[in-house]
Image (cartoon, rainbow, N blue to C red):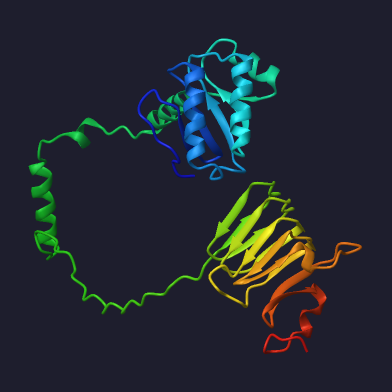
Length: 293
């Protein structure tokens, strides 16, 4: 994950890790760091939703109250605090008592990796690193080449390069965003291409895609497919109970659809100037022009 926020030395920073986010609060008062972190998260309130984080305190041992404030602050931005990191005595016991994991400081990881690299380094002999020219060896090599009828100095073979093929620029089609988690109220996914959600989309959550939207669960939030005007885009869901559906410029609100007695897979399509909702097994009823047969 790329670096998300940067700050001056000693200032709270939120940066990406391969397994989530790292929130660094070391080197300053925890209360001041929490105030600044809250301001930084407010700049992009929904950017980090669904991520998990490790809080690094360095030599500072936070109080249980400060730890609770940090957890609540991250949770308000959709970030789960899963572990603590630092070198302060008592940090591990505090983390266990509050229900968090513990990770070794990243500096310790770097030291271990550096030690492994030094052990694996290849040591060259003094002769290999010497700058003294081996003239005797060079004269012997030239003499052997002459006896074999070869040139004193080997010349590299120059091969005629094959004519380069003309390159053509091919525009890659939009990709598909795959979300294997439930979206809570207030969360949003915006993507150029298709969106696939394996989970529920709760009320208050929003999906916006320039292509199709597929929800392998209950779609109870807002879904907008074909957001750049593609009227052929579709919205699929195992349980389609959205508060609002949009396809291109067409809109259907919750009151436009009848209540279902049980959940059945359905698809929403744009037809005849409005949005129609069909059972998924009725897609074959659409003829080649896209109208209902």
